[in-house]
Length: 305
Image 1 (tube, rainbow, N blue to C red):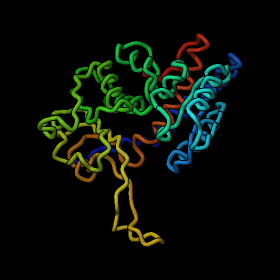
Image 2 (cartoon, helix red, strand yellow):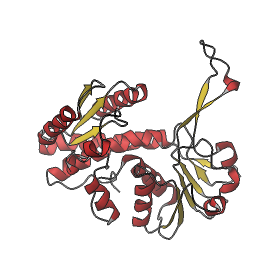
Image 3 (cartoon, rainbow, N blue to C red):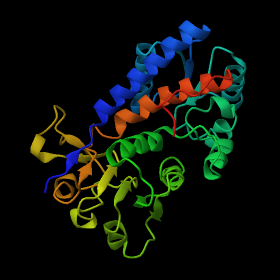
């Protein structure tokens, strides 16, 4: 068999279209314009690209974009002062501080300084606790995108055996909470899990989020399983030749050995083009949700968990 591909690019385009529709209606019916503030400290190249993409897509759906670029030597007090200003700004409904931060800054302190209702990344301890206890929370963007794709592919998730490979605070743990909330039977596997291959093989839904290139081999996957590959890893690709500087070219791969997995899975997300595009789309969705909640309006249909 050959697995169906879950097209994250197409799915993300659909989410952005829904967001744009909600933004338009908020403007027409309530004179509201959702605003997203993104804070970047330092000059990490990958972060710069990501922030640029966020700003472009925010503008494309009709939302207000507020970008704050700070030098790498920015003090904690200065950064916290900026966050306090954004917390108080009525035109800002979502605040995202791009990670990773420079080493002299305390990421937990910074994230928890963001007003929980504006924490569109879903990392604030209050949102973490609300999600864990089944209450209304801002949900982290990547797990939210994974859940949306799983619902679209599988329909009702109730009773399905799900394995989340990875236990990070950003993806693994919130993903497991979301699947539990949809009444899956959930196992979290990690580096200390015994017979991990057999554990993964039992999954009807396998979410791989460990950050290890092609760790999940084809024979780890049960026949017909739905596989969501969250990993984005860059590996050497000698078959692509050399760069101008003589170094071997690289390519992106996931946590799953894709060429092996497609022979056993029922459906799978590719890397690139799978989960990645959904992350920014869900960031935009969370900003619209935050705007609605802060103004006592019904939550946008089809954009929440």
